[in-house]
Image: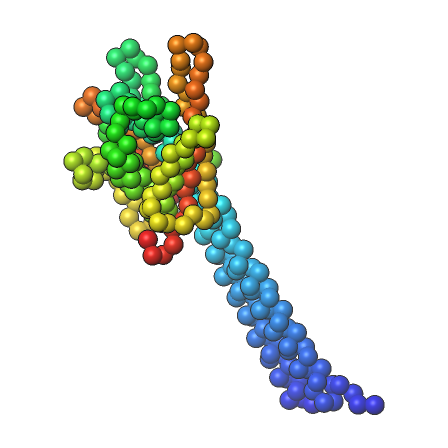
Length: 144
Length: 161
């Protein structure tokens, strides 16, 4: 009878500990997933902001063309970004095809090292040498 | 009458019930945590699709001719300004370059009963679709406008691609 009771208590303790362990691990996983989701959404916000506002090409009459990127403005990008109370570091570059080969302008901004990062490539148009070509604006984002 | 506690049957039942509860709760707790990240990935794919259309509307496949205009011309005009084979080759390379990794792209331009299709990669099967619809209008001298519907679709590729 005593042995049975001791065994029952031991098994109960093991199960309770296992449940607490699973809950803690799930909480940490949830926290990481939320951080990744926030980073992921922020990376697309930054890319849209750059493509639609900061990097837009202006023609001779001063008219802005959203989603048409002026490559000379890439070097003026601030390497940090604040959104919804979070601060981020960002690295940006532009990829395009010329003579059948993929070419890159950049990167601009410092890499965030080993920290959690998220990258996003947004299709844009690149104004270059009198023509407008398809390109990819790639943004890599880190928590500051 | 036999008492359960004396045979240890109640102990076994309690242990089994606790075990089942811990397995179910672990599966529920750990299983739901990637939903928000999946939703974020889908939002990104939808955004990418919308910007793919804008890119094809603003870039040039030939001097002064946007790819969207060139696609619409294939459906409406007998002598489009861009050769069909050249346009297909150009679009295949562009979709290959601009699409997200592991995703293919399809477009269908429709005017009345006429349509013009392109899928990259050609033999891929479309599943988990995200679509974007656009319209390109040709003005006519009588004031009428010919509107060509252009449907873009991105889909997840099988592992073989």
